[in-house]
Amino acid sequence: MNIERKKTAAIIPSAGMGRRMGSQKKNYLELLSRPVLAWTLEPFEASPSVDAIIVVVPPGDEGFCREKIIGAYGFRKVIAVVAGGAERQDSVENGLRAARGGYDMVIVHDGARPLVTAAIIEATIRAAIEDGAALAGVRVKDTIKETSAGFVRATLKRESLLSVQTPQAFRVDLLEAAFKKARSEGFDGTDESSLVERTGHPVRVVEGSYENIKITTPEDLLVAEFILRKRNNL
Image (cartoon, rainbow, N blue to C red; front, side):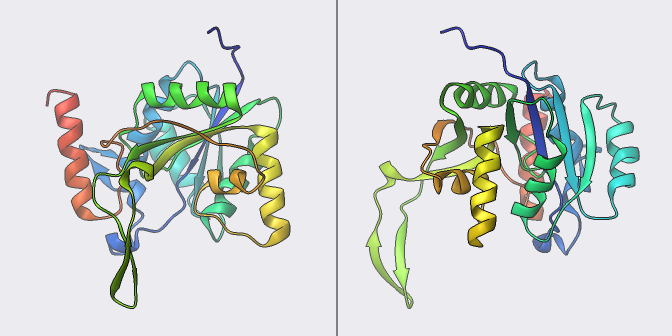
């Protein structure tokens, strides 16, 4: 099927503090001699489907990010570096405001997921162009149990469970409407798809990767380093 090209902006929320990293800003940590955030931005910079990138950073870090990451590593598609908000939802909405003006689609990806591939980015954007909203995810490997007061209540069916990742891509008008509804109702979601789901619009799932991990602990940095060395034959 021939899918019409849509102008797409990528929003990279990178404003969180790594509490499990000793309160360090995890996306600035070194991973094979480069900041985690630089690895994250690279496939979006290279993607033919991404026209612009907006990076969301902790308030006060805008200059540091522009100089030490955007400028130092030559990311030409970055059109804005904006301050994040109190919660992830606020940060992404700040990025969405910066993306207004001529973009049909937006793709959101965690700054702390440096192992995303070009194939996942392309598949997620393509699915969102077709259906309005899409996310990457992988099937749960472990047996998942629901608990209460320290006891098992139920064993959930693995076949219907998904471990949700980013990227997540949406039509701009759909995501803007989802943010407006959430804001008016005081709802705070853990990801963008949860906001869109509340509007009644279906969210399509595309195949993610078990390598597309989020850096949250020191051990994750070691795993990410191993994967990058394997990919680059280092």
